[in-house]
Length: 421
Image 1 (cartoon, rainbow, N blue to C red):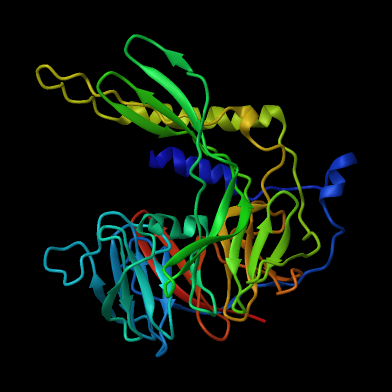
Image 2 (tube, one colour):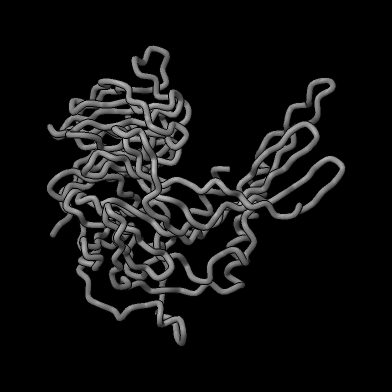
């Protein structure tokens, strides 16, 4: 499963040499403007033997940082120089704070003052970490079933100035299609989720949860395979999801980056929405032949994965054989007509209120990722070029960035850097 997902990600994010389209397509692309491109200056690197992969961080007031390493399933606190580290939670038997087996990427949420919430899906609770990087207490969410949706894959959860937790959830109203195929032993159906998702607000004082806005998402399709003895749900892989992305600004406004024409809508806490002009972007149409090639590549990856899998063990007497189901991609016609403007889960805001957007494609990107930096009015101010192999995972004060540098599979370092302005 990991290989085909990794292949889908590569297909979705590889930088492309893009040109403005002719005819009707030119309406999608605003006039070109000159935007300064910044690089990174001073960089501080952690020890490369401690981390396997970094998904989120939380800067501490004395210069230290809490790191969530989801691959190794541990929380690590580094000192201000990133030289010394101590593990405060992991899966070892003698750990005072068990990490848990189910994790989400955005499990660290800035809380009141300099404290931090860590989502513990095993106990359906928040663990409160103080400003020294120590576990202080446990806090119950208003709706425990929503903890899973507070990860960074759908936009990192955050607290508004009134202390209410904002996060993206899902609409629970699946639509069922007719059966794809029916035999005496197996039945296959497709389940389609709605194409929009709510932004929720959890009020801990009133113990309420309400919906404050909606955003467009890619339709998630799942194949439901059922037999007389078992049922399995297998997601259909979409390598080019076309979605809106969101984040919350320090003043409490919500910024929704609209994927269909690449502009930012701002929503105030009282629900008023204002739209900024379209941002510059070089749109590239996806031909039918290219769609077919993308899907064929995913099918080939999945076939290779299945070929590497060992044969399943024989069933116990009287028990049916457990089938091995393939992970299928969506149909070519389900892919969008243009490469998406924004990469899924890659919209963040820094402490100064600047919105960091990672476009899905860019002709100006070098070997590393190139971010669009948008101000609080929705206008592009600059671009920031990251070095090769780095991803942005968080911010500190005074223009500080935290980067994850994956040196090889299972070997990662945390980097602290500043933009050279």
